[in-house]
Length: 412
Image (spheres, rainbow, N blue to C red):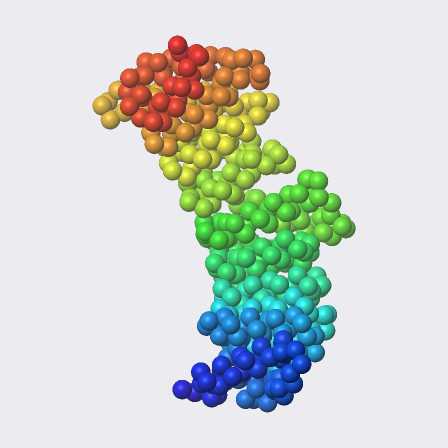
C-alpha cells in the first residue's frame, strides 16, 4: 500500500535491514568495518525510513532512533533538518502518532534556541490542532516551557484567539493551558483568560465542565497567591493583571454560587473560595448569601453537601456565619413524609449525604463545648440529644454508627 503522505513505505524485510544498520552504526562490532550505511535522511526515500522507524508499532525502531539521537548531535541535527524540510503535514503526522511523537519530543528536550525556533515555526500554524491531540499536546507543552514569555504570548494571541472555550474544556487542551499558567506570569496568559471570561454564558459552561473547572481553579490558585499570598509579583503590571483575572473569575462564582454548588464539577470552585485563607470576605458572602436559608436543601444533595461541609469547617465566628449555620440545622423544622414536623438535623442524620454534614458539625460543636473556640455549648447537647433519641434506628447504618461513636463520651 502507498501512504498519501509518505509515498511507498518499507516492507518488513527492508525495515529489518534498516534496524540492523541502525544497531551497527550505534555499536559496531569491535575491530569490524562493515561499511553499513548510516542514514542522513536527505532524500525522500530516506525520510520514509525515518517515518517508519519513528512510527514503529513494536517500538524497536523508535528506541534505536532516540538512542542514536542522544549519542550523536550531528545525527540529531540531520533528523531535525529532515523533519523541517518534510513540511508541516508530515511533521503533524509524526506528532500525532503514539510512537512518532517521542522522536519529536527528543528533539525538543535536546534542542538549542535555534532548534526550538525551527520547531516553533512548524508548530505555530498547527498549534490548535496539536494541543487537542493526546500525543501532540505533550510536544507543545515541552516546547513552550523552553520559549520566552513574549513568544508564548504571541502564540496565544495568534493561534488560540476565539478558541478559548474549546481549549480549556478539551481533555488534552486543558493540560496545555495549565502548563502555561504553571510556567509563565499572568501577563502571558492573562489576555487569554480575560477573553474567556468576556462571555458570561460560555464562562458558566467552563465552570461546569470536567476539564474547564480544573483550569479555572488552577488559574485562581496562582493569581490568589500573587495578589494576597506569599508569591511576589515581579512588577506592577503582573499584579494588575492578576487582580483583573481574579475579579473576572471570582465575580460570577459569587453571583451563581448556589447553582454552582450543586454541579458535579463547579462545586469545587465554590469550595476553593470557601477554603482559601486569602478570600475570607468572599467566603462570608457565599455563606450568608447562598448557603444560609439553604443549608438543609444543599446538605441533602450529592455535590452541594461537600460545599456545606466546607462552610461549617471554615466559617468564622467574627462574622456570625458559624452560629447562623448551626442555628438553621438545629432549630429549623422540615415537613417529613409522614406529615410530622422534624428538625433539619433529624432529616440530615438519615440522609445519605446529609449525615456527612452532621459528622462535620460534631467536632466543631465539641470544640465549642470544651471552650476551645467561641460558640454555643448547647450545639453539642442538641446533636447528642437527637442522636440518643434515635440511637436504635441510627445503629442500623454504618454512617449512623460513626455518628454514635463520635459522640460516645457525651451520650453514654
